[in-house]
Amino acid sequence: MQKPAILALEDGSVFHGVAIGAEGQTSGEVVFNTAMTGYQEILTDPSYSRQIVTLTYPHIGNTGVNREDMESSRIQAAGLVIRELSLMASNFRSEQSLDAYLEENGVLGIAEIDTRRLTRLLREKGAQNGAILAGGEAHGEDAVERALAAAREFPGLKGMDLAKEVTCSEPYEWHEGAWRLGQGYTDMRESERLFHVVAYDFGTKYNILRLLASRGCRLTVVPAQTPAADVLAMNPDGIFLSNGPGDPEPCDYAIEAIQAFLKTDIPLFGICLGHQLLALASGASTVKMNHGHHGANHPVQDLDSGQVLITSQNHGFAASGEGLPDTLRVTHRSLFDGTLQGIERTDGPAFSFQGHPEASPGPCDVLPLFDRFIALMQARR
Image 1: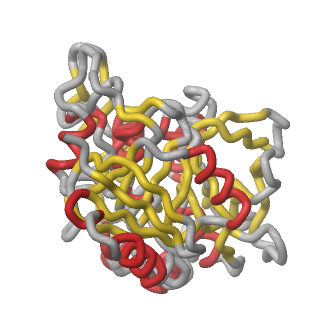
Image 2: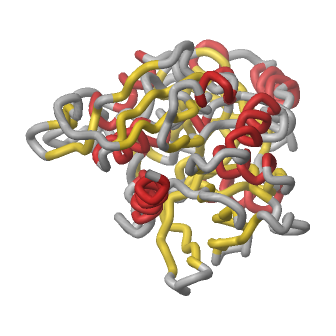
């Protein structure tokens, strides 16, 4: 039997649909993602913490889910909004249906709503605080009022430090490399790894770590609030600043650590939130975007070569391109809206990128950024 579900936004918009996944109530910032594939990677990306993700592609769930495609240990998104749930999962790697996966993880979803209308609304008004009521919670004459109240009670992501909520609890070593058909992920423990990289986990995706490991890096992953002195005591060849959710400005602990690293000659590489934190540590500022960038088809230009890269994006905050200090140089810009996508320090081996090069955009357009990080560590050695 179909269970009812309600999606309500802070502006008063209400959508009635069918519940998928778990029953109950959830709230968060409602955003839209334009990717046609990769719903499991999207759901398990820690950068989507406290966000309800709307997928613009209409038919979702047809390839099922599997253990290998998870980007973290669990679903991180606060909820899922789709047009149509596939009733059949048909893929040789499928292990479970999307509906069962959501329910197992206690995550709410809503299907059979007009996602085109919702996407236009979010583009025009910006990302909205919202709430989903599913199953029994969506029954009753006051269900809509309760959904609207839950949406308006969500405080919003501005000023919210989520990196320390999604990070690991203690340091650990990472040994998994690239995936191969029929073999799974490569065990790198017996491979020669020339460089020791300390990776800050602000909400890192597994595939970032795999790409570094497959390029000869021995990885030590540390919690977001790890002091700079502890990392420097590990004598790293390079320091990686991961992606993550929320507002970068409240992450003063990370900004202070990065400022300490910038006084050394150790190469730094940041992605997404790590990019924004490097900008803040260098004296730049960040801004909350209208509806953010979420998708697998965003064109970004390399300003040095003129090459246009197809990138995966997932961010609601951005480093401001105005008033940059002399120690920063812009390396990449979005061709959608001109926002800053890449920076590098002019006085040391530190650079960052806003998009997600590990998410197979292009599919390999942006992978040279990892090679550049390796080259910086090689040059220092």
